[in-house]
Length: 277
Image 1: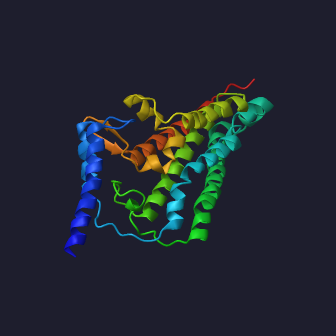
Image 2 (image 1 turned 90 degrees about the vertical axis):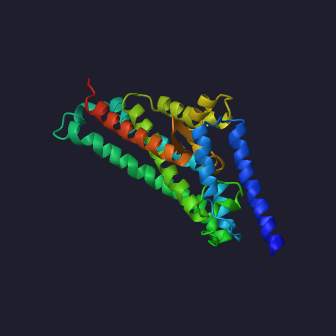
Image 3 (image 1 turned 120 degrees about the vertical axis):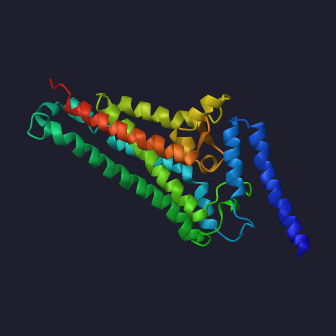
């Protein structure tokens, strides 16, 4: 009916106005550049309307629990903290690194084993956090839009695609933290020292959601806990260099993939070049 059409236009107009107001005035956490404002307004304009409504209890429940993936990261760090430094403490490095393939293959084998263990831990945690809600509340609604969580959301994704994106980026976050863990393990003899550093990386940001500085907040949001929170993941969080703007999930994927590559490459090199006693 005509009245229904008018109501829909007003409703979606208010949603777009909310986006525009936040971009223009900024919020308590970020200040948006002109390029970022244009970027998010374009994303908002590409959201399909009218929004399709329906039941999606299982999928929506995962968004409230995604931050618990942080426990998988902690377990991975605990499991892999001694990958390299155990050889230093037990003085087996002198034997292993002096073998025919010790310097050329052992480091790579340890990295591969660590990735396998960490991947299994992450998968088990993911099965629990995603599988349990889907079993109890059903798998219906995967194709419904992300705007069911918040009408003003600017991501043109279905709930199923949004959940899969969190899972994939979360896996990269885990790999990035694994890269840091292996790097520390190749340099430090104390596993407790390594775990203390990882714990600081994981736990300290839980106590800080706003540093009241635009640059500091952009750095803060790269830490794992905030990165795995779906409320941040699909919010209007972006990083810009001049006219180039990248949304939060893209930045996280690149950042943690780079951490993993750098961490594993350097850890293998430092381990193979370790001077045995």
